[in-house]
Image (cartoon, rainbow, N blue to C red):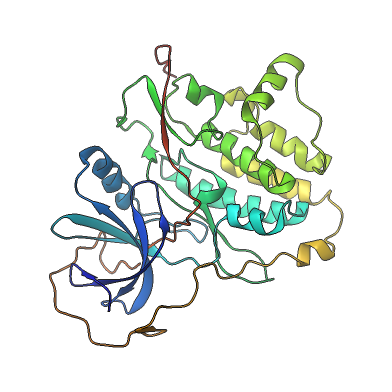
Length: 334
């Protein structure tokens, strides 16, 4: 049997790493269900502060994967979220390459719906990228996306946990204003959504710097190969270097996506060929669908971030690393 954490969560097997800790499949003895548990050693006070911020988020939306419960033991803390089996968008592109435009629009619609709920809570995600966008294992059915990993998210107006001349996030998905040290704001998330969408439809990670240069020097670029013009008009607005020229809200961007879908060709066989399968794998020996096959050992008590809260997130092995990027010039504040 696995290690039992705080008398409640039995760690079954590792399923990946997040930005601040290992992620395990775990059995919740109280709720009698499998969850994903992000575990952090209580050794890095700075990282622990981010961890505390992340577990404090409570966003209930079908396309958001936010923390639901937490527990602390002697040298470790963990929080849990639903266990999501279908891997990430990075896995999907690795399996299939470029995705059909209508399929991309479905994913983009769900991502923007989830992001609307996040922004409605005053939260800026700050690390939207393919590896942080997970999928339920729906097979060849309609995909179901969930935005995850709020490790560096912050509410607008909250004090930063980094020095003012540093920016934290994942290189390649920064909005231009982030690199200039602007305060975290919703348009930066929308820029990252545009990059993710371009990645999904081309199968190649976009060169954000080249896009920004083209906008600045030559205006809006022509649609990349394979990107239908109606969809490109939406993506080009998301990717504008000037945050004031992007969509004002995720809801506005979502409406534009739905309008663009009406102008795309009807779905073909390619749309039906995409399958989101289970990426976690079978349970190890000693565990079955209804939990461990032997009685658990006794332990301490677990805390809960909210009464009746359940569950934790799958963070896939390709989540990559967060980087702290130094800004050579003084921070500009918006």
